[in-house]
Length: 181
Image (cartoon, rainbow, N blue to C red; front, side, top):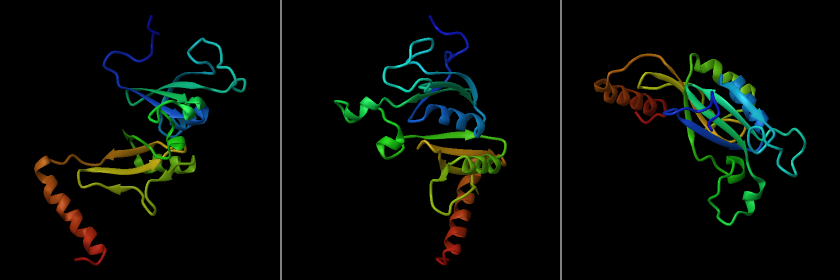
C-alpha cells in the first residue's frame, strides 16, 4: 500500500545520502525552502529504530522541493565494509560528490548568503554569484553534507539564436580581464 501524500506518479524523486540527516533536512528546509513531509528515527516510517543507533537519531527525512520528492537518508555505516566499492555512500565518505542538483529560486543572492551562513562552501575559490550569458543569475556551492547545488534566478529570456553571440562576448570579456585580449 502506498503512503498517501508521498511521492506520486511522474514526480521526480531524489535520495540524498548523508551522515547527519536532521541537520541536512534542516538545511534544505531553512536555506532552500523545502517543505518537510516527515522524518523519523527508524529504518522505515512507523518502524523500530535500527539497532546500535543513539536513541532519537533521525535516520530519514522526506521533503518536497520545487515539485520533487526529496528523501534524505542516513548513510549505512556498514557500507564502508561492503563487498562492492560502488555501494552508495555520502559524498563526505566517498571523498567526492556524484551529482549536482539545480534549483531555480526567486533571489539567488539571498539564498546563497543563507547557504554560506549555514555552512555551505563555494565550489571554487573566489567564486560567487554571476550572470550567465543564457539569461540566468547563478552560483554553485557544496552544502555542508557534500552535495553540490546550482542555484539560479531567471533574469531574462534569451532566444537560442542569440546564445552564440552572447557566449562569445562573455568569452572575450573574460580574456580581456586576464590580459589575453
